[in-house]
Length: 278
Image (cartoon, rainbow, N blue to C red):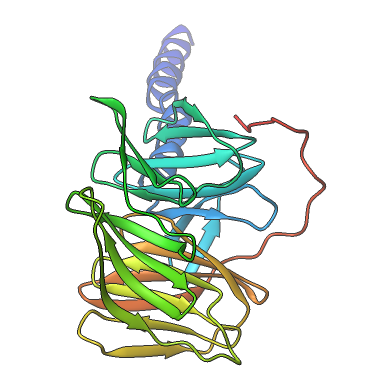
């Protein structure tokens, strides 16, 4: 009898040794799956909040709220620059954040390989920030009839889509105070341009009825997405278009572009001023 008891106790001990790691391994596998889930980018959800987008464009899911009370944002190179409540914040891939500067209202911005550019069309001041040198400023040319809709870094200045009295144009604004106009942006007076996003090879342009991708070689592709009011960089290769028909992702891959509707978010009550979700 005692021999049977000892054998049973030994068997139970061995079984416990085999089973005891399972909860930890299951938890570890679950966490690993979340960590490995592909991240498409960061989207503005329509409630002035930013959320991560997981999966693939055609079948994406949304994560929880990351930042609230967002006026404007741009993400690339494992960093997000967010304008919220009169301040500019930087978020890095580890989730840490730091305040960079105070700003008055949404300010046009564009990302560089290692930082961000802010441009004031009123003063012509171009502010550059990177983690090594901090802030530096230069003065670019400005005229009273120029309204910058979008811009990107180019050499010692910026390439910008500008609205002038004589229409929409692509211009280079240089540090030597010169302005070079290099192409017109087509626009129908009865269906004006509402938003534009400059890409490495062309631009996305939105009217009331459609979004067009215009390449640098002049070729164009039209998408029947109306009501787009803004574009934002979600990641290195994806752009979000916010519209009255929902939010869309334009994802570039090997010279091609894929367009998909992003998951919707129910309207929410206004978040308390200054609140940032942890």
